[in-house]
Image 1 (cartoon, rainbow, N blue to C red):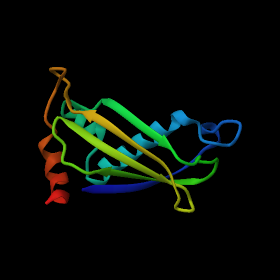
Image 2 (image 1 turned 90 degrees about the horizontal axis):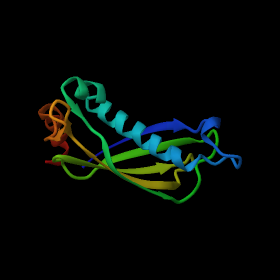
Image 3 (image 1 turned 180 degrees about the horizontal axis):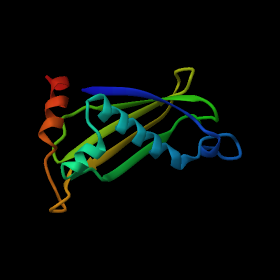
Image 4 (image 1 turned 90 degrees about the vertical axis):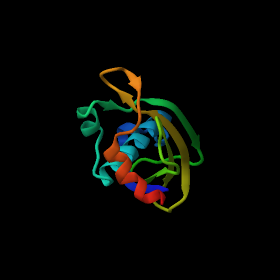
Length: 135
């Protein structure tokens, strides 16, 4: 299993009239979590795309427990519980400043060969960096 945490402060433009983060913005926080997780492994979406691999989202699940509020610093914990194949599964836990769990989510992404526009295996260098956490 591999997990990584990053922090994001809820901006005013992300909230509704009640000061709650708008429900659609949670998917963006998940993406920040994925990007920062990849960065922690020495990878990036742009480097994968430069090597001809893209990772579109196939599925998104989101459960709201408590609202994220304007100006709160939210911790986004991103977790990979199983080594990826053609698909990679991410789970998310969002915590407020009191370390209360406020949201859980999951996304399924697929590795796609950009030249063939077909699903493919994950890049070898990505698997090498990730596999050390699963032994």
